[in-house]
Every structure is written in structure tokens, then in C-alpha cells.
Length: 276
Ligand SMILES: NC(=O)c1ccc[n+]([C@@H]2O[C@H](COP(=O)([O-])OP(=O)(O)OC[C@H]3O[C@@H](n4cnc5c(N)ncnc54)[C@H](OP(=O)(O)O)[C@@H]3O)[C@@H](O)[C@H]2O)c1
Image (cartoon, rainbow, N blue to C red; front, side):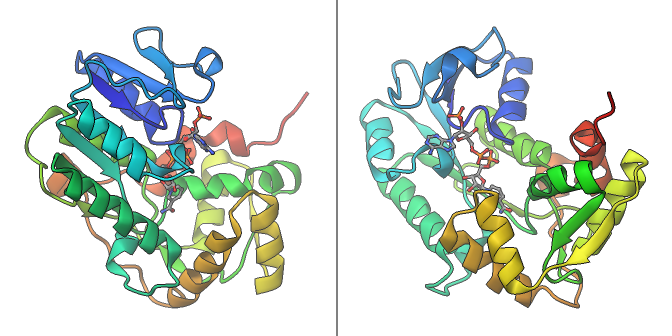
């Protein structure tokens, strides 16, 4: 049995589907399993209960354990879990102690190593394509995308590629003890992302550059935690005016990563104006 934590998340949902397609038994965790919209074939369970009977492998996301990751990892080890595939971050390679994303994921990786289980740490680089969903409401209502540093370049990763690498780490032994680092396939500025959303949906999107203070307010309103807001601003500053390094996912998937245009096509209705 494979346990998927954060099963309703951007990565969790496509991962659950891949594991089911591979014919595996899946237990999927959500805070509200009854209304989580998980496929009928999975055993849906409550995150707070963390049921581990019969579980051999776990997909682990920190978002599901805001109270800390040490205790759930210790419980997994004690229950006989043999493998943990964790969604970490390439920020673990940044030793700046103010980079809280790096600090948090370094802790996570250490706790899992110390548990003495087989591990794989996924280190997506270049940012999640899904962060563009934060623009969705403004794009739908006003046709505008707002962000600081329009010329900051990232290499957005499609969540389906992250899920596909996670599936490989869970279904084969090829990535045991590895920390696959991969970005999306193209270096794009934030202004490029806005343009591509307009091209794919057929509804042009104007890009407006925000000041730092405006960006802080916008992100806090969108629910980004305060420490992550400051980390983002520092990260953006480092990304201005030069191409983002591409770390291909091909070695882990045997195919190129999915483009940002593909990601927009998969989420197009989220960005389109609602017409009655
Ligand atoms: N590098 C980047 O650009 C970037 C961008 C986005 C996310 N991330 C990271 O990637 C990880 C996974 O991404 P994701 O998009 O799949 O995750 P996500 O959607 O943020 O969260 C996964 C699931 O965790 C559950 N969850 C959320 N808050 C919770 C809470 N307070 N207590 C318990 N459960 C909670 C939710 O499920 P239920 O509501 O069903 O319980 C959610 O669907 C996250 O840890 C996030 O930090 C990185």
C-alpha cells in the first residue's frame, strides 16, 4: 500500500492517478476525506489520523504537516514504512539561513535520512507553474497579471512532471538514495508567463509590474505566509535580467518536461472570463 499525503494538492492528485494506473493500492490523505473528490478506487483517510497499517511507501509533502514533520516521520518508521519519497526543494542548496524554504526542507531531508528508511528527495527548481494560479482572479476579472520584477526569469515546472518523477521513485528502485533536481524546460520572465496565458486562452493578458510593497500586500492577501513573502522577494531580485538555468527532467522521465503553454492549456478555464 502506498500512502499519499497532500493527496488533493497540485502534485498529489496527478500522483494518485498515476499510481492507480500502475495498478497499486493507494491510501490518500486529506483533512476532509469525505469531500476531497478523490477517485473511488483509493482508500481516502484523514490526515490527522495518519493511518499507517499496511503502508510500505509514502509520498510526503510538508504542507500536510504544519505542526512539524519529525513526529509523522517517526510514526512512519515505527509502523514499518520502508520508503519515503519527499517533495523537497532545490532551495536546500542555498545555505542562506534567512531562506526559510531551504531551512525547512533541509530539516525534512535530515529527519528522513536519520529515520533509516529508503529515501528519494524531489528537488523541483525554477518554481511551480501553479504559482500562476495566484493571478487567476485578476486575469478573469480584469485581464491583468500583476507581479514585481516583470523581467525576473524562472523555469516553471508542471506539477504533472513532479508527480511523474514521484511515481517513478515509488514504483521502481531507480531513484532510491537520489535527490532528483529538475526545472521546467524553458526560461520565462513573469511578463512572458502573462503573455503565454493570453495566447493559450485566446484572451489577451496585460502585465503590470508591482512595487515591493504592493507585491507584499497582494501575496499576503492571496494567503502566502509572511516568511515566504520575504523569501520570494529576495528570490525574485536574484532572478532579474538573466536566463534561468534549465535542469532537464529528461534523465528521470525519458521525455522533456511539459511546457508552460501545456500547463496553461491544462488550467485554461481557470483563467477565462466567466460568461453567463
Ligand atoms: N517551489 C514552488 O514554487 C512551490 C510552489 C507551491 C508549492 N510548493 C511546495 O510544494 C509542496 C506541495 O505542493 P502542492 O501544491 O501539492 O501542495 P499544496 O496544494 O499546497 O498542499 C497539499 C495538500 O496539503 C493539504 N494541506 C494544506 N494546508 C494544510 C494544513 N494546514 N494542514 C493539513 N493539511 C494541509 C491540503 O489538502 P486537504 O485540504 O485535502 O487537507 C493540500 O491539498 C508544498 O509543500 C509547497 O510548500 C512549492
